[in-house]
Image (tube, rainbow over all chains, first blue to last red):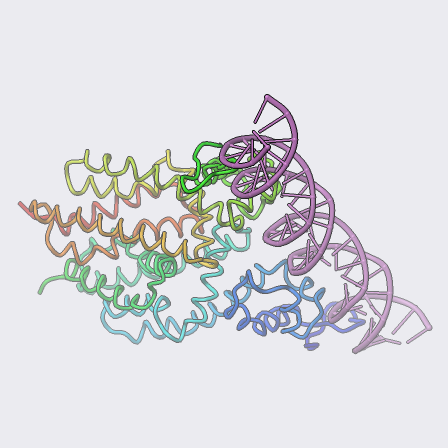
Length: 209
Length: 209
DNA sequence: TAATAAATGACTGATAGTCGGTCATTGTTT
DNA sequence: AAACAATGACCGACTATCAGTCATTTATTA
């Protein structure tokens, strides 16, 4: 844990990489959050799981919600790292879009979705400026990306220009299915539902040869 | 409060209409929930606002979340009561659909949305069987209704049959916009966004004369 | 040894939820 | 009509729990 040193002036004591330790603590209790949910964990349990004292948790996090935020940040960063590549591998616009939405159904991402669910719950009722900023950035980035995929499809002559006007509502499809899916307990066939919707929409917006 | 009596055997004491009192308590603290949010209210404050003792709250509700659930139930029932009429007043299918989504933008329903937001947050992470049932019923009912509106439009020759395949994704539009809107703090122009999406979609699914 | 950063867990204040007891109302008995 | 019995409604003091703080200890380096 004690690895990086202050470069300014003489460091007189242990200097830990605060950022790294924050990550270590967050990851060490990730499974606990996924298994039990934020409401059913205590800070003491978290501290125990992370092998640190209770007070130490507060040296690195504002509160429980802040830990969830960190976990989401870490997992999202990992997710984003591979996402671009996976989308680029697809050839058609339709395939790209399906992959674009795979966050919502990819079995490998079940953990991320579970934490994301907690995060959405927090974001709805107790957002802070960091969360707001994160959400806004993430949204804009993905939405811009989604529009770029559509535009590319238009430029290539695959889909009609009208697709751009559908972008916003289209983009929100995943969120809507996710939330209603979780709430009604019908998350099993989200992949099919997304596929059906995209296929149907493509019947309408595809450029006829 | 003391009105109905047990009909079986001799009733020996005051009998209050439990259902009505549950409603009275819920409504009396509705504004408190809207103003502060569930996290920032204590049961004591709620009891004070409702002019009852703290213990009495627990005679009628399991916990704070249960109160939010009751408020949502009440407001939704009021909302539903007028919804059918408002939709029937519209003539075209497109107009009906726009009204169908007005939950998400009608200024008169801001209170309902505020409570609904809390309710969604709760439903995501601490659902119980009552909540699950409520959500499932509500969902099925509205989805069935939405499909019926589309089908009617198809039967009338207003829109193409393909619209039915879009129903699920289309239906989820409001939820998606609502959640992302709240999370990114961009709830102001939901009405326009819904209108744009519907108009665009109608360009594609309308039956050309 | 002095200086400083990091870590800690006992402590505090707040609050959710419980429980034993009181009160109000009405049926029953005399 | 008075006394009593039975019961549901109501309540707030009490308990248990837990988030968050802070005085103290430990570790490291010069």
